[in-house]
Length: 443
Ligand SMILES: Cc1ncc(COP(=O)(O)O)c(C=O)c1O
Image 1: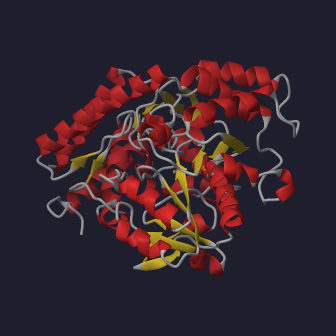
Image 2: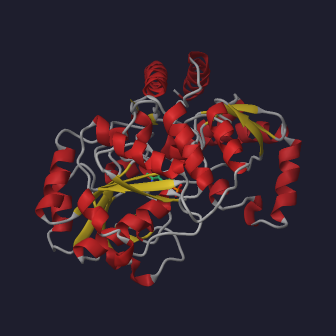
């Protein structure tokens, strides 16, 4: 069921068709580029994701601050922040300068520079784990902590929560599908389902059941779940239960801060005093340049001694360009005042969304998490299963294209809307006005 039973489905589909036609009509260069691109790229895109998340492929000319401009010259405020990767803003001057300086000094040595050390030091200051390693993406950081957890515990199984997304590694693509755990995409190895157990976020009973066999190496979770199921906040006592149960069953706890670290220095882990064994991060940590990182406790760090030969690493991991960008992002952009600014505006965005929902008389719930907001199409869910029942593809597609026609890019529901650091109060007001207008058409 969806909480949209009262909404006129025909109206949603008509509005969507009209908005999509309007979007296409004004963008001849975009449409021509799709045709050209399809000759050498399936879907006309570098990867299928870029197609599945937007009804109309868009090609970008450049970005600047809180927005970007497409090849037809249309500018969008970027409330998708590239699925959180561009929280620092586009072409942020501090990051541009650092990257330019490093490019001129070379981009790869298969040896570290000072910046790698400084970034590890800064991450250790922010998060309650002292030892850090680098990758090129959050997917790879999660892949490595899973391997480390298997080595340390001698166990095989990973527990994830329904509705999770941690990247496109094998175990990360197992979730509940057709009522049971299985691959949610094609092309995975047949045995992968047996290496993953799915529990429900906010539900200690399902977690205990998953841990009870005593074969679980790692529980990997976001502190508040984002992505496919939108945003699930931890209920009272959830994190305490999670930590308590994982300790009781000898299972390691990994917290994935890839999306949630926008809530403040040290992410939700530090904000909520969590005690993970491992922390993973990516995306905005290097201002949108390719970089992922994972931090571990001192005792887990011993197992990363090169002589122990844990399967980690890649040629470009820890490269100087990513390190320079991360140093600039962490020391010059992702600073306490910037987080506070984005969170204040995130609160204003949430207030505006809530008002619009109220004015339209819809039974929806507003989302509030620092710079991030959005809506549930019904009462606030507690678990991934409840959240899944509230998703609504056609309505989400309408919101996106409606906003895009009004100069606002929202794209993935998993990311937001999220207020980027360079955004202003006027930018938030523009979002709210367009959103309000849409809901008035729906209510
Ligand atoms: C929480 C979380 N972890 C990991 C990832 C994987 O990040 P990447 O695609 O940059 O490897 C994502 C991507 O959306 C994510 O949301």
